[in-house]
Image (cartoon, rainbow, N blue to C red; front, side):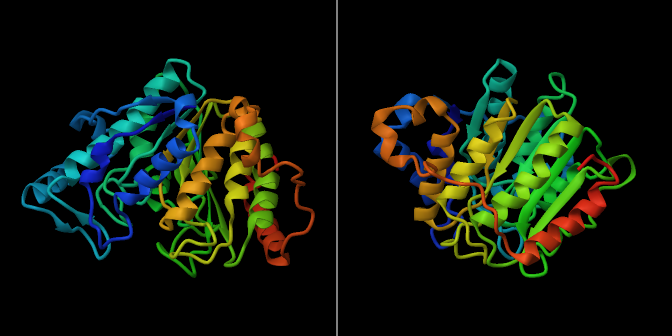
Length: 346
């Protein structure tokens, strides 16, 4: 695995806000602590240029963020802050996704941009949900000459409304989001009937999980949905909006995932033998965030799993696929299947 990271992300910081510099620092610290970092290729991002940002965002919005930050920053909405450094740092986070895309183009198989601020709530012309620029979308646009069909999987606690909106009419980008039921959480959208429109109809798939869903529920429903979709859609690359706030310790939600899920999802995605490009999204309990990332990164790297020094971290040893899941989750699957079977063989 290759990772992309910069200490300059720390310049976008509000110590009184849940989305602060401690998040990415926690991830890097545990990679050093466990001795994993020396087995990874580490790259530094460069700031995205305005022409890169314009591939996703409207110019007036880009200029607004730039001027807002020049004046010292403040709150862009009720929960999204900006500082005097935020335009530069958000451009750097977008640049992390661009660097990831370049590494993929050059033949890397699994690349992870550990960046902040996050991006999946950012629309073409609006910051929201702690997000300024839509990092993954900006990286995806840099891959257009290399690939034709893109699968985005977003497993953040929240629906990535920004990413979904950007590609809502685009049949070359299949967006799948598994998230907490939006009747119970921000951003109050991401229901199963939001399927895309016009040429993009059918290419937006939502899996709104009931509160208190756990590892078994997530693993079962993703195992039912993802493989047949990949077989039918035939993506050339998988892009991951990697949010870790569906962990049971996270303060923002009511989903009960553990580190085992994040190990499992990495192992699960490997079997499709496709290039994988990830960007960090949410995750606000530092202990949960760092250990979930540790497992996600470890299980992305089969060569690391085989090393004796990491044998005590193999939390999936003896793991069995779930056979029993909540009745509500089985019902949800049936409802989703009845919709998406109109577009894909499932």
